[in-house]
Length: 167
Image (cartoon, rainbow, N blue to C red; front, side, top):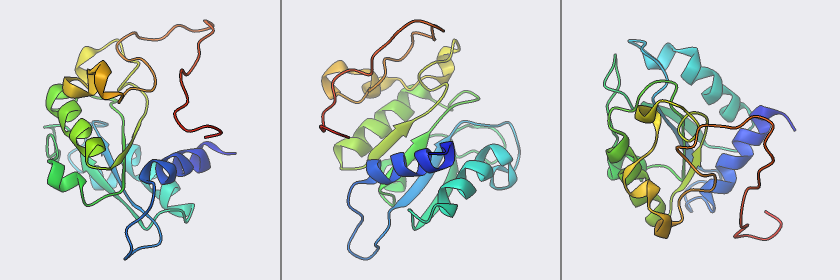
């Protein structure tokens, strides 16, 4: 399975059941990924978007830049995110507000949305790239892979408890 297919499949699974008006989920890339003034033309956004759409597993994939730089909107609202069945987020740059981003993603999950967290949002040595706020609450069960620990190359690790057998 290619990385493209795996990412799209993860998003489709995170989306769960699509709404009745669509057979495939709508996905949002909510990322702090660039200092570019035009995220809609930036390959750090468009390459993953195009790869996700090309799988045919999703209805659409929109780009929401989560920085205060260039055309970034800062932190999207819950209303913004509720237009989608799944969100993928990563942070090559700092989120506009890691606490607000973590809070809105936790609210989104609590409202039935699916979130895929990718590189740097959970493995960076730069704390401004972490999802914070309610996303960090152990009682919420939002984190599949422990955050804020950096990474240890060559150290055996486990994913943890599988909530859905054979998933």
